[in-house]
Length: 325
Image 1: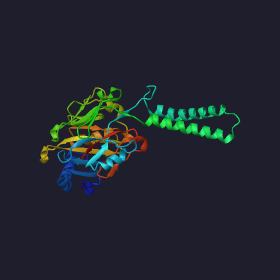
Image 2: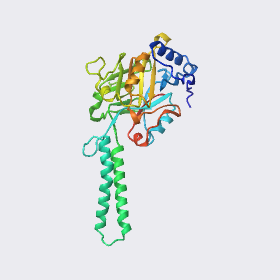
Image 3: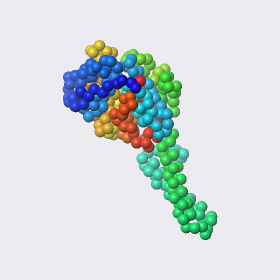
């Protein structure tokens, strides 16, 4: 298993209230023996889990779940320096209705009732049967309706942006409802820090590893804003910034420390995008994106979870993730 240490010395919140304190926090992490020896270090601080990764030692790559309910297990089996969940996903039912909490609730209520009615209708074809048979038909109809609801709601979700991985042989351009045009992407073209890029719209051609369907948090040192007309205003951010539960990836230039830069991953089950963006800005992150939020968030290292895994029904909706292996 990859020898990646947890920087236990930083378990107490560092109180990053100023750029100087933020600089000290990052400086301690990249000079930690774990980072010097392995190229990755982890810390629980300031209400978040943090991972700092050297891009050459552990290049970014896209991973794909190995089984419908094995999303979390696949992450553990990567033996990666850090792994997280991936992009936002979408789905429409057979009638073309977009799956939301409301439509899913209607399905889970309506299909079992329809199953019960169908079961009782079957009993009318054979009058005079023992009464237990009627109950069994009703129960069987409800169970079948429930199974149909599970399949209709949780199977075959589509990423909201293109997914590409040369290492894993992935080239998925399904792009649910063409939402990738309004979301952000994160990709690399090589292994140097300079080859890592974050942008908005469609994932560009030629990327060796990358995915769309993400939420833009920082672009060229300008934090995203939910205020129309303000610098950095982003419609995605405005709609999603107040949802708690965030895992974000950022690019942090560090020439002053003898490095071109590092990959910074931060996750919290209790903070929202606004709070995470404020922390990333204080640290001097150049660009950053958030993965799918709330109950979908997941973050781990090697064979251990820092955050997650998501509930099984959320895992059934997920397919892809990011890692530094």
